[in-house]
Image 1 (cartoon, one colour):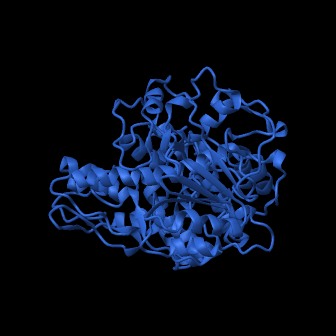
Image 2 (cartoon, one colour):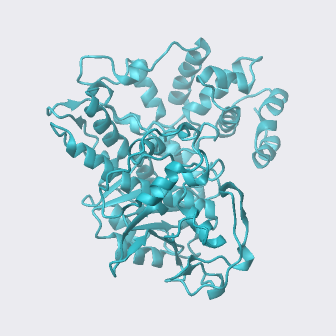
Image 3 (cartoon, helix red, strand yellow):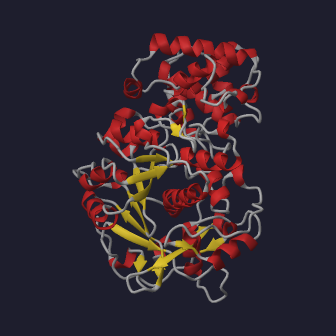
Length: 522
């Protein structure tokens, strides 16, 4: 749908303009956005460009909406990386588009935990067509036609792209592409694209041909964290067979532990994006408490724009930084293979680590323990393979020592081990052997089944008690509650209705609780 000039956001001189009807208070940013005059027409009716202006929010002359736009680069809080970074060095400028030193220093000197203290794409500048310094642009595309045009015009000739997906939490496979691949993010050093498949017009082809061409081209490297899981989702729902995938966790492990000689720590276990950003881009990321599990099938809020654009851009900057550090190693190890090839990670001496690819499909690494996990169903349901390997002795490397996976295993509560044995038997007897078929059948994940079994078979144990024995520090109670509910709903598992309503259902969000109360129980 074409928006009128008065409601469009992009203005060539001001960046984003906010219409009077959309003014709001950005409480999490500590900013109040005032209404601004009508903006000029966007570059494309379906591709609004959000551009971060060069003005820093600490400038006393900045207007209210310029200050708000300045905040657009902030990637909404990650509790795992909120400790103050001791590194004050500006990251090495591995790309032509590099972090602005004044903005980096301002973030370093900002009050700890404030929006200004976090990493963001708004800090990056590069040369424009006229030679002037320009900020990163963001294209927000809401049609197949615009998506193909932006892909062909701006991304088709790039050698490396940041890549990520967002989808509706708890979406079922039967609900189609719009809810299962709601938003696609690509990023080059100078631009970020948000392809909002969930908002494509009715009747539109939901599989953009130019995007498909990019993803299936092995000569264009797509980088990200948990990238094989995202590629599996594309293959399942859009019939896109992605090639040229680079898992950043592989490169991170290779560079980080080759520098210290800890070769036994190099494996395919995933590392959260925020952890990698903090170590190599020298600032923490800010992860929103509600954005990740929000409805990505609806028009994006500003928080969602911030979250999704930042994740994709972090990928392309991280890859460049890690490659720079890899090339400084002496001897220099080769870059890890593309992830879809399922080949071992190679070391500096030419040896290969016999690492398991199951680790990179187990689940998306946790960024914030306060959030229920929004995971790919396909990847969650493959977790069982990784668990079974662990019980057989763990993933072994070519080094003559205990692997990292084995070293991290600690004695666990017998109730957890009993539950995992039950899960293995349940999955074998009741779920399809093929992971794709499990997705189509909307089967419960091993995590969900394990939480259900522990709670159901121990009558005096609350969801909070279950959380405390599953992990130290404990999982958040509402995460365990969501697991139990999902297992009961998906597999029609038996429950004591009175206890279930009191201990599980009343702790669910209202919409889910309503569904649970109306359900029939075995």
